[in-house]
Amino acid sequence: MQNKKLMTIPILLLLALVITGFAYSHYQQILTIGGTINTSELDLEFLPGSVTSKDVGLDWTVKSTCDPPTIIMPPTLLDKDVGSTTYLLKDTDGDGDLDKLELTIDKVYPCYYNHIDFWVHNNGELAWKITKVIVNDGHADHEYTNLFTDCFDLDNDGKCDIVLRWGDSFNLQTKYCESLDISFDFHIVQDAPQGETLTFTIKIVAVQCLEL
Image 1: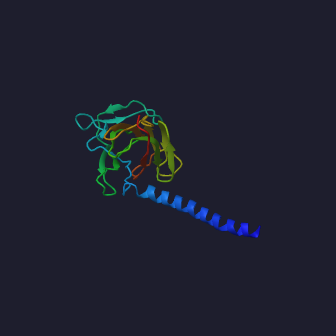
Image 2 (image 1 turned 30 degrees about the vertical axis):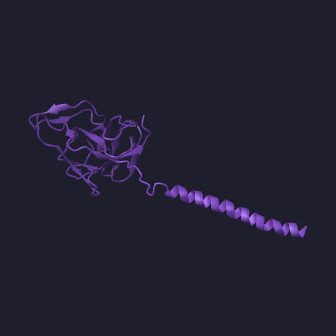
Image 3 (image 1 turned 90 degrees about the vertical axis):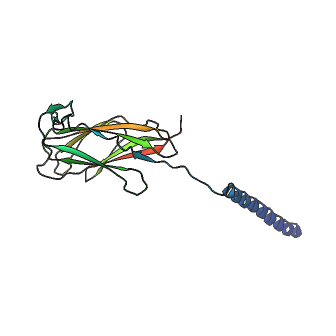
């Protein structure tokens, strides 16, 4: 009986080595098939030349306003040249993609209104869709997964300074070389401070989706 047990141990060890060797060989084979594994890239950028601002009229002096100051309404054109919005597209990581839209909103006043429109281009290999927009008011992130209108306190005094309204650009499949039209409105409300520099950032979050 003892001899049978002693004979059984080498057999079990051999069986374990065979199983381990097979699994190891199989794993190595999967890794080395083809020699190199190339992953696809999910990438998007602001399309050069696509940004439009409805801050000015045809004569470049007409500005927009809207009332009441707590709700974004269709704007009324005013014949005055006070506030202005300019923009700049930037490549922040040196990869050749314009990944940042920088707005400079200058000399604004209560009820100053603007509409910003731009195209986001799929310059990667994978289809994607926008699932989230994150607005940072300088103090906290505010996340949205659907069209929204919201008020933000940029100087942290407990009062609303700017109202943003984001269009419905969520969950729309955008394939390679396609572009998605996105826009948002904003206006300055009565409690915004005078003569101050206020900042906000908007991040657009896109994720891979299966092509249909």
